[in-house]
Amino acid sequence: MMPADQFLEKAMQKHPKHAKHTKHTKHGKKDVKHFRTIWISDLHLGTPGCQSKRLLEFLKATESETLYLVGDIIDGWQLKRRWFWDQTHNNIVQTVLKKAKKGTNVIFVPGNHDEAARQFIALDFGGIQVRDELVHTTADGKRMLVLHGDRFDGVIACAKWLAYLGDSMYTVILKINQIFNHWRARAGLPYWSLSQYLKSKVKNAVSYITKFEDALADEARKRGLDGVICGHIHKPEIREINGIIYCNDGDWVESLSALIEEADGELRLITWHDVMLQPQSIEVKQVELLV
Image (tube, rainbow, N blue to C red):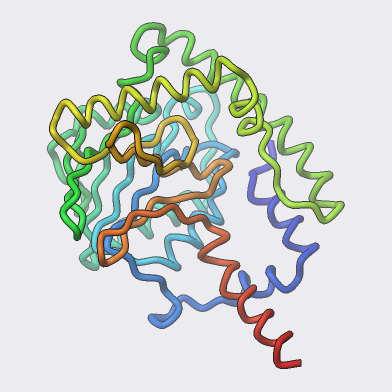
């Protein structure tokens, strides 16, 4: 199966202005975007579906005081079935370790796909703290529960065999989606997510997501916290649920998204496109205005 990045590259070739910006951007101090905190999850390193090149670009183009890795960083489920690990995956691990060495507070919260790491909870490795869950306090005082979220997934908790089946089906959907997007890229059309479309249209999927979000918001409320930050369901979101702030940082298989905290405590979602392509779009508009 062709890595997902290659399909994005074909699309970028249809838009040379964006491709040029991405290829030649230098990540010097003035080019790097600084945030107080960054949350990323569901990278699924060890699978062809991981958009590893885009993730590596994102990590090199951003800096933060704290970097949370909110589970499913390495996909142990898929690696057990079929080994896939290229140099870019190595580079991502090395980049994170380098951030920790240079002073970034890196916290790894294991998920269900990398659940083997839960045996190391409360330990530190190479400057990376392994924690089951924790409370993050934003610059403006909001207290946010941080956890992967799989324990609030009824399928994972009650029928793990069904979760494995669902994971296999999701892999098939990704393969179909990549073939479809191969032809979209040749036509100069942007990436389109079949799985995200199905999640938004299939009634049971919508109900599942809503129950998951409500359960996590309820847990934060029971603990007297202001909100919750999680991953797991590959659906980036920030919304208020009965007075509780629910945040999901998305994934790096399709959404290419992260949750960030600004210096003043504001929480918002950003994507690889925001970090790598937006500056070029602004430059193009300025040139057009001058002409």
